[in-house]
Image (tube, rainbow over all chains, first blue to last red; front, side, top):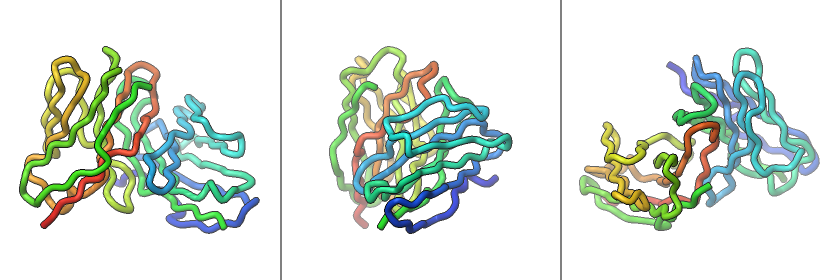
Length: 114
Length: 111
């Protein structure tokens, strides 16, 4: 079975541009979460979606937005890119939203903002 | 979220046991203790979790102190593939959906 997949693998953008990152969860998983990991730090929670609804949001500006599609795949959008948005963006899927579900992470998208 | 404290780094030799400590003195009664690890250039992967009792799986063992204020992840025989950053995370049940990562412990395994 395929794990969590993310595209693209790497991306280079310039300040002020917009970017869209994509995630496909494990088959049967209905929840997708997004994390940002800057160099030398642990991942930081951005969003969680379950059954196409936002269930949680971390401490990120409104430039960050996301959505989940009927097939449970998800997109993360970042507008007006800043140099500080350079990071590894990780997607994680789980069967459910609450409780104590295990999360399965994809390999991430490395975003570089110049 | 309750906070965890881990050493920044640890070193081990191949085929020897490794004990990775985690302190969580403000843990609440409903917090599960999760361990994830992140190999170089990969996303984090689940290792093990527990609530009160010690737990074993094919990857590792988790020893939880009786007062639950600390825990230890045990790799019984470290291999070079175990070199990674190990994160100890407290996660409550209910509607708590997110994982709150700290900086973790960088484990180096020497051949």
